[in-house]
Image 1 (tube, rainbow, N blue to C red):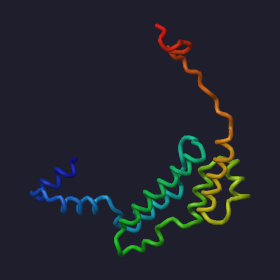
Image 2 (image 1 turned 60 degrees about the vertical axis):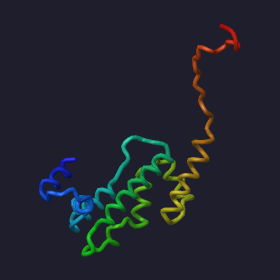
Image 3 (image 1 turned 90 degrees about the horizontal axis):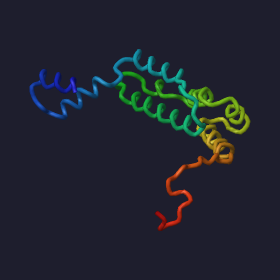
Length: 151
């Protein structure tokens, strides 16, 4: 909100298109050094808390999507194709953020591309985590054992 107030004070008008263009230039990558910094950050990305395989894949996919959207804001003078994550880098990130048993499964059944490895990780999740017996939680309900109409 402070940016909007500052913009209004500088320009003196409430033109939304000018504000959007100003925000786009402020929140985009301007130099190659910035782009390389964010690529390094993405290459070393590590999920904090251990999630299930499916959650880890989804979080990693969303982070990669956000990074690619950020790369698309690079000015035309910088070569964008170098800044996008290549297939090998995506595979490395996937392997770093999955447990050891899933990594072993991916090495044996994952294939060569990131997409095939991601699909194999989801297959592993469906075969192992979804097939484990569920632990039912006993719910203590005030209606437990009562017959309808009893008071």
